[in-house]
Length: 339
Image 1 (tube, rainbow, N blue to C red):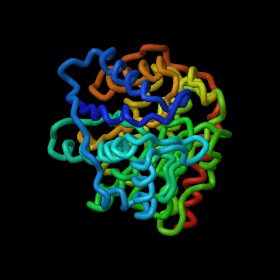
Image 2 (image 1 turned 90 degrees about the vertical axis):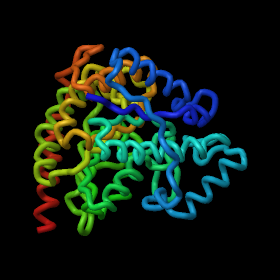
Image 3 (image 1 turned 180 degrees about the vertical axis):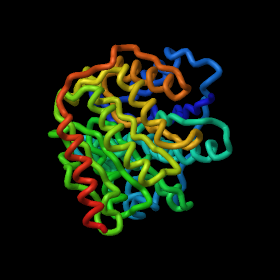
């Protein structure tokens, strides 16, 4: 089977500055991981297209889009304490936001069974009117909104160690896009509690699984089996979009989870069962140890083509089982309230 690998040299022009963890070298590590997986003939390297302003404005305010362009073109600088841009960041952000759009169009044409969008800057913290947490545009949300507008049911599963507060906020009252997040708690940005389950007609369409520090890969896999699979059976998604952050790896400098690269192979295999072939997209989010990022990418890409590659042994025995029970209960309570 063929998997699209969507990336572009423009992503290297987004440079937040010396010593920043979200550095251009991350993209080199990801590309090296693809080569390490030895998937010759099974990966199609394709360029993204730039997102159009109207596509961005499905999830971002016009004022924010215009202000970000002006700021980047004026030379850039810090948007907040963690998020900085350079003159090249505008074009990089447009290409990052357009990667999923291009990938989804190629998947609809039957050109591959899945796609991995190796983008920079990442996106899941970006809010409608604000950059945040290294993120400028919410890449996964731009694609999810485009698919939802066409009448598709979209399931977004976020496995980044940090809660995707931006993605959650954008679809909190929108039942067309169901958002599930596995994330460390406590950890920045502090959102993603069990009782955040959506509002209005979107009640029950947000599911948070805030796992404790030290959680291992077996907890994630049980969470998929016990929480996400029943949810997918309930909603029957047309598309699966994954915010594929690799900062839950035990070597990541910004988090305290305990996954290995081998866990990402197994998690990816489990997630692929949630939507049909040709309707699965992964988006690079976090992951700040370069070696861990490289090996985790290898494991993930191999899983996308149907292989099981364990650069490191999968992990088990960590805490978090009680959170899975609580997350399933919170979702059911939200559905009961909606009824």
